[in-house]
Length: 140
Image (cartoon, rainbow, N blue to C red; front, side, top):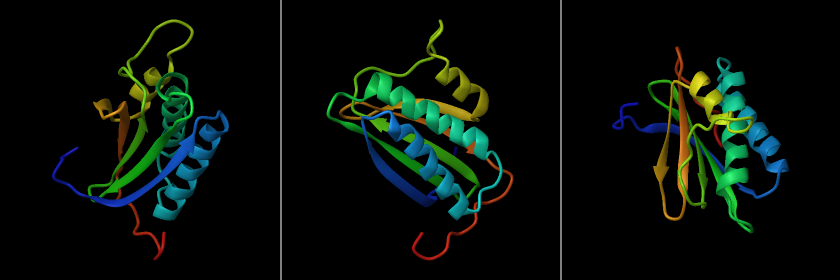
């Protein structure tokens, strides 16, 4: 994505370190996409939110902490998901019976990556859409 393009829409929510937070993050994303008028690629977006949130819980969120889910809608119709956690290390694609989450993200998203933050990291993925996101109603 062109870094000079500014986000037109941003929503975020902080989640505690609990398995129920993954379903809550998915519902928050579903609600946000509905408010923004996004009807395409929602299944892919929701699955990637689930995978990134699950990875944050399993590998990135220290006990007693949480993770931040941030959603962006850009003027060029790109949607971006970010999951911020305070854990060490960087996410990567792993083999074996576990570690399939980022393989799914790689297959579904147009781009993904990891950025450092202090403490921890931000794991993100982006989806390009054919149409611009709708402008949400006032107060959304």
